[in-house]
Image 1 (cartoon, one colour):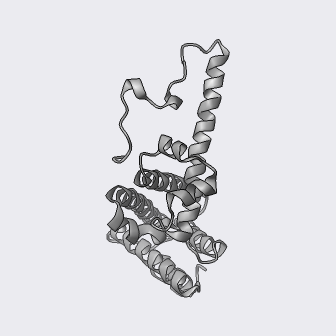
Image 2 (cartoon, rainbow, N blue to C red):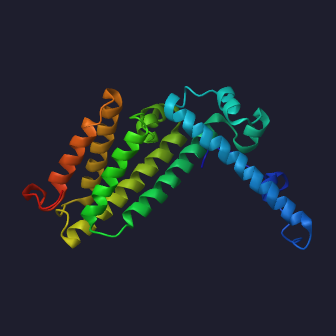
Image 3 (cartoon, rainbow, N blue to C red):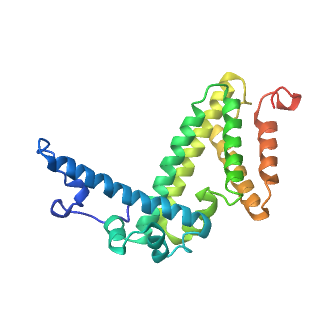
Length: 235
């Protein structure tokens, strides 16, 4: 995306420079080992940064704090990221990609669409419990902050939210087809409203250090969306 450095053919980063035509020698394996270490260092910066940002916010994490925590010299940081904003964009891209993998795995589980919807809600609540109600959701943590701070970072989160609500809309369509969820006149709008409800509940739970808003969101989701819920057919 738009804040990374541009490279010409003569100054491509070293990890793109393996001798692909020399695989019969040890140089290829040595280069691949170097590339693997390079990837690991970059991932260490990203994962350490995400952990710090989750608790302190993006503005609360200085470069010196980040480098001290991950044991990486300043020069190495700028080898991978042109700026703190470029690091933030890459961190959010990694977060969204990881979130999508988990979401896809959850929505691929067997059972009805209603079962998978409840599994999604339960996973959100379990994540909040495991984090001690200090949310690991970076939309909750950073949404308002990065919207004013960085348009590049805002776009990454916005695209991630659009991906998630599109998946939820598809789940609502599947539920209407298998009879486990009430049909929605506009599945996209219903999915956006559902996500907004859970996002708001997560923020209220974070503020109050109490999961009651999330429990109420779960109860409301069941009563509004699950076919037969009001008759006690689904719990």
